[in-house]
Image (tube, rainbow, N blue to C red):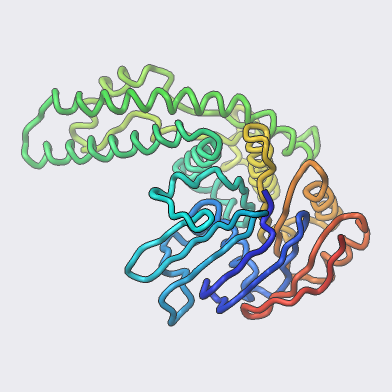
Length: 367
């Protein structure tokens, strides 16, 4: 799928915007704070029903307004996200409102690459679990169902542990009820994540070596307790009782990013290696979604060129503009830089838009 037209009303710093996009590379160029990234975030909303950058929907409404609306034309289909203060958010497919937002996830595959991805390297394990869960959920709705059910059961079990602590009353049978729920959904999550890493690892290694060279070491390891979940829960029962928290299960897993087996990237990797890991993770995400859905995801590249030298930028543009990839939306602060690159790649379909304080004008295009 390609986003042919993007229409915004009262979204972030845009009062109105109506943009015709090409099917290959679309560049939004302007100073920091002009609104380039907001356009990418609008496209992200249409795929995931939420912002990539701000989890509070109401804060994405333009200051002083009562609603925002985002409409995307994908061929003959129109997808809309509308939020009004005090009434909640609606996602629509051809004017039909979804009963549950999760019904929409996976319909428009999309991958965002941004400076925030550095947190995958430097942040806690929760961010890496969310990355893994997000990729799998786009291609496997059964996984998403189990993940949501597991999270609800975990919340209830933790609430019960706290209540029993407050009441000074331990009820083994009641804890066992929620253990059964966690085991039912948790074992499915374990198996799905293991299969994912098996498929994802060679894709990551391919892109990582493309970025840094074949001799640079780098790999991924899925870290989990290998015991059956029932045994884990039984072994941690006393610790759970006193901590009032469930200390075992898929919610404790991590995706280890390693230079080698004994050298974790977070501790020993240079800044350049960390940035290369983050970019390789996202390009591998693109390839995984393509392999498992048969559709090329839309690729969003937000302000990543300042982290690469000019030859590598040209190489990346040539890669994402090739038949291997689909539609690309990217941002940059230097109009001369992207224009020079496209002059060296004259056969690459593209459009360049200049962004100034929430307003756009098309600078150039080539079909």
